[in-house]
Image 1 (tube, rainbow, N blue to C red):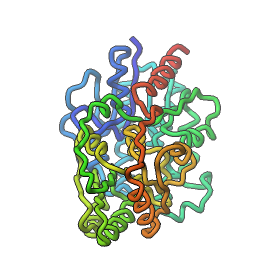
Image 2: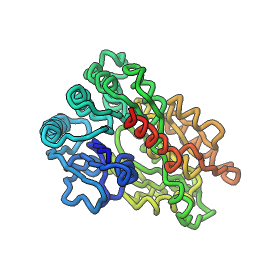
Image 3: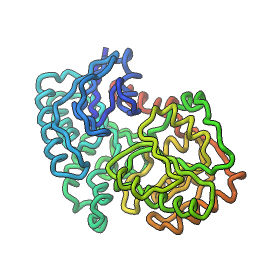
Length: 382
């Protein structure tokens, strides 16, 4: 039986509540291949250390990492360095694989694997989840004015992309970046997607037709323009409109948002995705609110919104996202502009009876992920 190593530093595990593409792939590939998943002892999503991996049908290896509190910090760089050193040691003692399926980022893990290929003669598939270092401009806006090739680590990023035999990316935007450095690899764009069966089976929350419900799911951080929507809803509720904004998730900006929020804004924290889907089915509009500097393209939250088929209030200006929204009931507002957000929410409120729900089958994970399995099979045949 062929042996596959999946390298995913930010992966969630079976005992944890969040979907992760790499965990899903490991679960689906088990039985067809002998699968090993390598990730960190530190959980990026809630900044905690793991004590239990949960039951799995494949091998899970955890690499030590001290962790960090802020996503943009020197402590994070130090933490990743410890992980990388541990990863190198683990590879030197454990490597016996026919194919490695590796998440990007981290950059360094992929550079290491690219060098190891020359010695061990395995196939490498790199799955692009983010375009670091370009995405740093969402936290440091001045970087946005620097050409990508002059950014720190750009040459390393190019090495990471160039070493791949196969490229997978969560959006066309990210694939285009990777192919600048590697035009010869087999490639597939596969959105994060959602579990359509889970969505179909989720019992819709009973809708209160007297209220107009907005919903946001995901991280509360510098990359997301949630405060603008909170302030817009505050203003509309103060003017007597029966509008509520429901927020699922958490992050570093949560405390500040709670200080800003007034009546009409409800914080739910983290919930089981089935419950979130049920709630979304009873809402009128989903909020895809990214800050103007954010470099994300097709995010997890957008995948869920498109899969449920809920109308979208959107601030993203990414070309690919705007193309995906064509023909879908949505309004675009200017990130950071409270008045514009208020006007667009009011516009959707005024036509609430006409808003159209329509799931987008391009985000059906069960169908779309077959492209990844096919690419892996093809790699192993070569």
